[in-house]
Length: 407
Image (tube, rainbow, N blue to C red; front, side, top):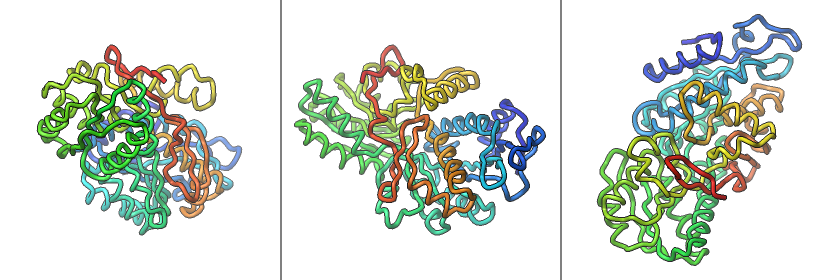
């Protein structure tokens, strides 16, 4: 169902309705012919808008991350709606066709196929879970539509020869693991147990942490895999505790990360805990979780900490405005990387720089694009489609129930 937005509050109301209904079409209205102001609420002619298909986990597994990315999209659409995107001889409106995949890879694939074939989207964004992202990868390659994944797991863009239309917004596992390993070594902790979720993200974490700890001179005492979301992680936590580690690394996305830390504490482990970037979500520090995670460490893009709000660069100012608007709409901001916002802006940049809405041209410009977004710096090249730059990562700890940057 198509809707035209008349102001920021309209986006928010429709966004909430969409989470329940599972489908949403949002519009950011721009101008008509170049240099000609269009009346408020109008859009460029049908078929001439930049249309982006979005598949998110708004319900079910992954909702802890998917809902946050939907909120980020709504805020970014407000900003894009003030100017539109200059493409060719028109200043194009940006529209988002949002679907709730409910954490179901098969559903995500069907929705993406419909968006690519019937709706004619110019790009796809979404999949905060590795499993749903992998389902979208297949559609993106078959339909030759650029896909920007919001999930964790290096295999999303590898092997590159089979992922030519796929780009990953999140940090590479190796970059996160090396930072965690150096942080652990700096605290003179010599034995580490690893708790990793199942699937591609967990596999990437096990490989990356094993190598990073070895390089840092830290012994990996045990590796344990967490059960599926919603299942009790007590057994995995007990196995990690039995290894008598000096520290535990939990490599899992929210809400599994907080559940794993809770199981560790209940098993009697009271030592330091280290988390990968996927653990950071608003739910992670809600309620009793805040006490359980007090003192825990995480590596995450530098969009997380309030210290970045003093940045006076264009991206820093946009980040500050994003946080301000988020607090206005949702009552508080406990931190996450707005990958979806950056993904939409990257697609818009690709259309603008390529001077076309052609999928192939957008892809060509994406894979030769270096830019600073709100979450961090992206450096896509023809040989590297995992674009979050390692210099955009920072070390954080939970202090008084909030994330605080330590380096």
